[in-house]
Image 1: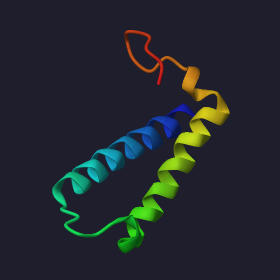
Image 2: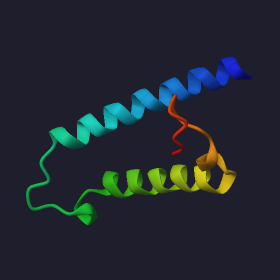
Image 3: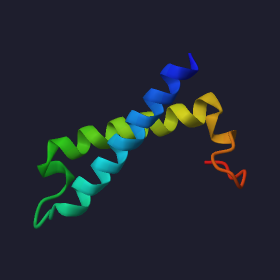
Length: 70
């Protein structure tokens, strides 16, 4: 299971970095989240992801070498 978990975590990390880059490079101009349905879809997925971490107790895991949690 660990080999699959490592690959999944790596893919999620790369995807989140790419999403952040995409968002930084785009101008919203006069648009809001209501004008861009993809933003609402992303918000829903991001909230679901963060809620899952919290509900499963993963927010208590140590996340780095300094033993900092999420």
